[in-house]
Image (cartoon, rainbow, N blue to C red; front, side, top):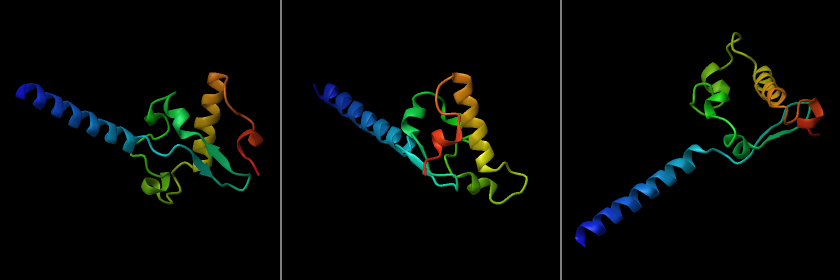
Length: 106
């Protein structure tokens, strides 16, 4: 009985830690960008179910682009990276917005 309780306790602790770890790495539910063309609201949670994090976060560091690239003129512009990644995937999957005003809402 003592061994059973020890194993049960260990399982509960491991499950709780895994749940906390998962919650920390999932990021925000939605992300909003505010370029001149209009606000783009990105459903982060829905996209996590469709692809691996490294598709968008190429370093898997989950930080803003500028945290690594800073203002390096050789680094890709965020606008170009988003358009290439997002529109490219939407066209390839034949699903999701591909026109300006389908994403940019004023």
